[in-house]
Length: 143
Image (cartoon, rainbow, N blue to C red; front, side):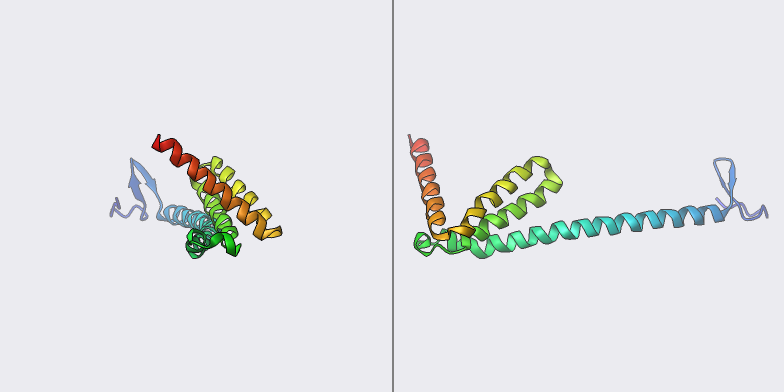
């Protein structure tokens, strides 16, 4: 509290007199540190969030085509985009939820890599494998 007794404008805190200039200096130093940390956070977060947003766009834009009825015949890049988008999302989640989420991120991008080279054959093999896994799962659960 300010003691108006003419003691040079000092502030009494816990029995100690502190000049206001020290509060201003400490406040300015704290403000500089907060601004620096905020800029670092936004810069890092912006990069991560940009990747996550791009991954989400890839997933949303290509999910319908992968689920569609004639997907095996087309051999399009939809599955490639879906896998890369999933990898980006898992990489973003790894920053917040733990380093173990890098494993699915790397696996998804690794599985997407062969699609670049032999798109039609690899695409058909992936879809056939997924259909077989789903069929086995259904048979196991129904029993």
